[in-house]
Image 1 (cartoon, helix red, strand yellow):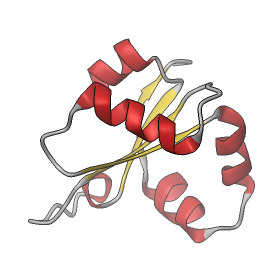
Image 2: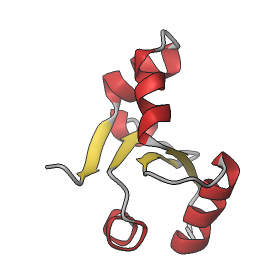
Image 3: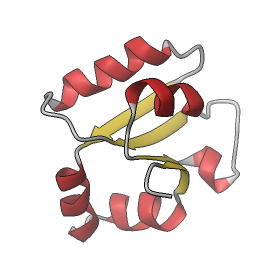
Length: 97
């Protein structure tokens, strides 16, 4: 999934978060990914684009942010970003690396 996303969607970064990133996989676990990509598309259109490309067979949640949206989110004090994604997330792909 990550290889296909990196090659065909060409994001800047892909971050895994949630139960898989924490190593706490259970029966109802899904795949939670933050995808950072420069785009002018609307937020929900980005999600649809990724689902159409990947056609996941497992439960997945994709959150596609532009670099500016992501930078703003990283600066926020919202616990979801500061604790879940920045704190526990695992970078699976980084175009800059």
